[in-house]
Length: 248
Image (cartoon, rainbow, N blue to C red; front, side, top):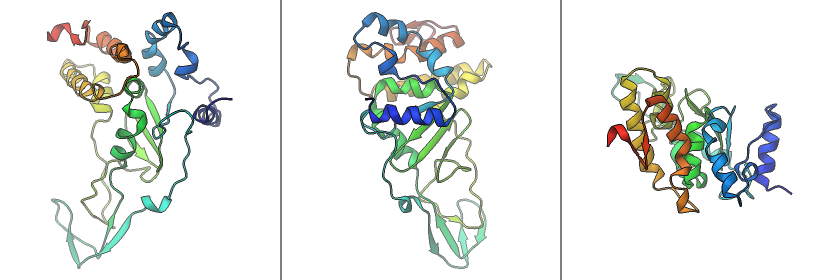
């Protein structure tokens, strides 16, 4: 009787050997304001302590599920014949008679523009989770505090510049860009210099959050209460209706 997305999530959890699954719409009584208020106050604990967040990133609703029919050839790299020497970025000329063009950044198309991430409540779920498994129409993507990888690039960054061709003999370099808007990185660093980084991450998060959709506008502040509690506890700062007292 469960919607397909819920059934798929249950199956994946069992495949991972995990027998406890949190589903907001089932674990919180949606028609009870008392229960919603109680559970919303614990969202930080639910998501920060979870083993993994299963995200139905490409699903517009719970009936769609996590799996899609897909064309695997659409995500394959393609080769271009060149002269004897080609230039790669700002580096010296590299000898190669072929360039391989990998698929472009699937992260922006599949994740940031996905139906799930247009919902305001989802932002803190992703930011607070130590690991997120994204199920999209094209592939499965992985995100954690240390890295972002995909089915196509399990050992290299998920963000690849489509405008650059990579010589077959030239290794793809790992990027060191901070994931999660720089948020987890700032949360894990315990130096005073990280305070500024955390406030910067907060403002970047708000830029995106205020563009997201809410069914109930009154949830605008509660939907980020988990992030607020985490920042407040780390910074020793007080949250005042969308602002931080130290920054007023």
